[in-house]
Length: 349
Image (tube, helix red, strand yellow):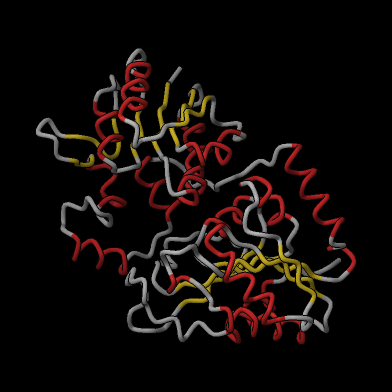
């Protein structure tokens, strides 16, 4: 049996999209047993995956927790360790483990963080890049390969797709949500997840643009549409402003901003299509096979693989993919997003 240890703790969307490597690993190592170390908040994104034997929650900021886990993991000689996070405690952890092959970030004997040559296609574009930040940023802009394609090439496996399995409780919650708001009785169901937390203002579609988008789509669809407004804890005030801006103009369900992770996913699963920023909601939709229209300004559109399940609306401003919090989003208009939505809405039988 080949024992494989995956270290990927955050962010939540990154954890979920990294599950794309699991089918390929199982094909290459047919007898493998996968253990996945992740952050406590991300456990539910991995735990239900049938290709993962064990999920270990780790608070990487706790030196005691890291040391305790290191002692436990060191009792196994790992067939392969895949270290996809570059935080110092995690690099230190994997560097202390007995393994036949380590791929990813680790700690040199002098304490410097480094990464193995086989993962250069990804880490060369990141904060640890051996080429320096300026060159890493240029490589990010020039990149034309998606995250799952890059990871598959690095690991020598077939490119797979991320998956998220909803447990019975979450499915029941989703069914109840759909029934409570009579989603099946009013035409199409379009999710709106146009915020992106507090850090990335330029990843969002503004309150005004989101309201305009809903009005355009409502008109084009003859009112036969329900919009489900989604968000996280950082979008409470913003989503209240969207509700206020739309008033009674469209049929709008405010799903709230405090849903547990799998409840949030269950709501997304009830949408015919999701309009989203480059955020966790997008990765949830992809993992659940929900069609999506996603807009990009500061981040890389090429990095996202939609698997034929949607369309990208990409900024045409000079600072596209600059990773600037104040990147120009003026070319991401409600009209462009609405046109993409109308092209991508699945046909009703």
